[in-house]
Image (cartoon, rainbow, N blue to C red; front, side):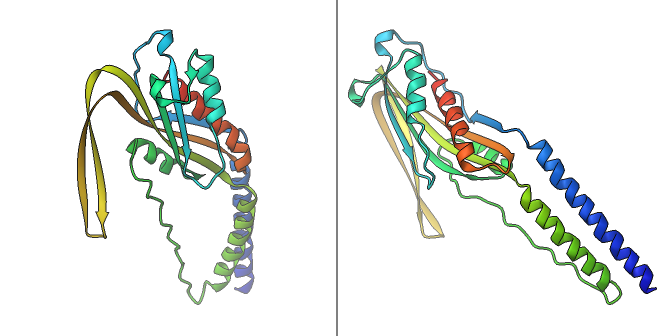
Length: 245
């Protein structure tokens, strides 16, 4: 009887090692190439303008804890399209304002959720993982021990091969001057503790059209380092924003 148990434990352990190794190798193969995606939540259509109106005031913000700057890459692409960057917003036909709100390792489904919610939506989120603990019977202690050893080996293998996805969430506002009067309604929700909130609406009448969108940029590769992800995220975001003009 003891010999049979020993054989069963050996089979469980060997199977776990093989499966863990296969899982790690599969991830390494599937994710060996860097995959980059940049998606915009809403399309912005700007009317064609004459050359003298191709002036842009650019304001870039980064409110994350990561050091990343898209200013140079973005301005280079805009200039290549025939636009002139100006320092005085009063003399610019367009204002281009962007804020990088979040930049971190993130599940692709979570990143897509931020894209679906669109411009201005809250960034609160994240998932809560659950740890399941299996019960043991008096006759299965050896098998459970073998399973724990196999699980430890699997964890060690997975630690060497990590499927890493960096996601960057950016809100964009483009303001275009016009000779027409435009009414813009802005809504703000302010929480009063945890039980209530105050909603305020402000209507502006001005000679400006305002367009808003959100851009989600992702970089995915096995064992991807942030410094490796940074240049492709910057390039994708700068290309996407400049594509509006």
